[in-house]
Structures are given as structure tokens and as C-alpha cells.
Amino acid sequence: MIYYFKRTIQQRTIKEIPNFEIGCWINVFDPSPEEIDYLAKEFSLDKKNLESGLDQNELPRLDFVAGDVYLFTKIIPKIKKREIETYLIVVAKKFILTLSKTQPDFIKDILEGKVNFVTTQKLKCLIKLFSLINESFEKVTAEVVKSVGRKRDIGELEEKELETLLSQENILNNLVSSYNYINLLYQRVIRRIEFFPQDKEIIEDLTIEAAQGLEICKSSLKTISNLRNYYSILISNKLNRIITILTVFTILISLPAAISGIYGMNILLPLQKNPFAFYYILALIGAIWGVFLFYLKKKKII
Image (cartoon, rainbow, N blue to C red; front, side, top):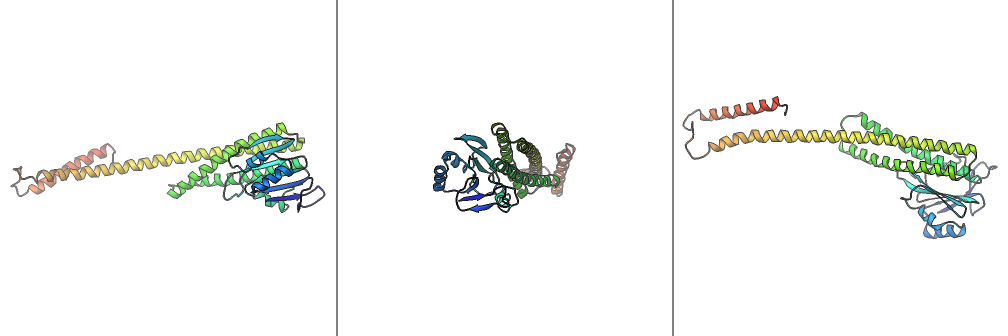
């Protein structure tokens, strides 16, 4: 889908327009191959870069083609789903274009006028988009880190909670990768694109925020790693204890079975004519059990 929006400094709100105008914002999401071809031909854009904007595995980078700036970054289209996708921002001479597979949540804020988005000021729009992307990453990071913190403060985790923890670890790994590449992208943008000093300071602040988010994610990953190691050791100890108990139980059962098996043979045996032989055998078994259990207790095996 291709939508055109425009807002000048004199206008209070952003408005959708039916066709392209100079200074407009072209918002594209989930485009068809035909729409990609149209954008490439109509606005002299690089088709390969447009197609790369739909590739989820595309790394954040900066590219210059025929005077147009192509910025590949990462977004979390739906905060609740926490999936990371590629987001392409094109700063051309006459317009700014954004392209993604899924419409990000922050686009709604722009269209509702919650964000000061003047489409004729392309570089300021670029900074606004960077800020909105940072905010979406910060929200997800805060939610995941808070959830990990709760797991650390409670007692033994159940299987479902452990599965959730592993899922959060995967999310954090993706966030770490995205933060790292986005940080590098911001640094390249500062070096390669000329901004006003005030705008440059904003991007530098965004770089610092991204670096802080990266460190927070790394810290949470370390916490998850510690929790995983703790529960791995805990489960291993429980398994060893169960095996020990079963082994002791097996030995205790085997002793009377062996003695009764011997006295079940059809041969002459000591005490076989003694009326108290059964009780003597029970006493012998009990004594052997007592010595065995005393030894295990002394060695702190049980």
C-alpha cells in the first residue's frame, strides 16, 4: 500500500493527499511487486534497495544512490508481538519515503498529530523517525527487563516460566543485535549527513540512548544466564539425589532377596531345623540394613 501525506510549517496537522506532491511523505507498507516497480520508475529509486527494505534479515546500514539517502534500520512494528523487522527510510531531494513489511505503531501517532512531523523538513522528519524507533525499542526493553527481574526475585520456577524466560532471552539477543547495528548507523549518519548543530546533538543523544539500551539488554541476558545456570545445577542435584535414593532402595531390597534366595535352595543349610531360624534371618537382615544405613548417614550420602 502506498499513501501520500503532507504538512508544511504553516499547517497544524498532517493530511493525506491523493497524489504525489513535492515535499510530501510517501508511506509504504507491505507493497506488491508491482508497487515496488512503480516506486522505482516513478521516483527514480533503486529497486534493489526497495526490495531489501522488505527483507527481515537486512542489517541496518546507510547507502547513497544518485543523491538519495537510503537508511536501513530496525523497528518493532507491534510492541506486544516484539518482532523485529527492517525499516527503510529514503531521504530524496523532493520527498521522504518510508517502507516496511508491517505498519509500525508509531505511524498512528504521527497521523493523529501527536508527533510534530513536518514533511517539508526532511532531515527533521528523519530525526523524528529515529526518536520514535528508539522509543519503541525502549518500551519493549523495559517490559522484558522488568519481567526478567520478577523471575529473579521469586522462588523455584515452573516449566512454563522457564520457557518464557528462554523466549525472553531470544528477544533480548535480537534487541542486542539491533541496538548494536542501530548505534553504528547513527554514528555513520552523523558523519555522512550534514545536520544543523541542534539536530546533530539530538542524534548524538539517540546514540547514547541506544548504547544504554544495549547495556541494559546485556545485563538482563547475564541475569538470565545466571538463572539458567542456577536451575541447571538445581535440577542436576535433584536428579543425583533421586538416583542415590533409588540406588539405596535397590540395595536394601537386594539384601533380603539374596539371603531368602540362599535359604530357598534345596540343600542342607545352617539353622534350617531351628524353629527360630526365620527370626534369626530377619535379625541378620535388619543388622545389615542398620550398618549400611549408618555408613550412608555418616558419609552424608543420604
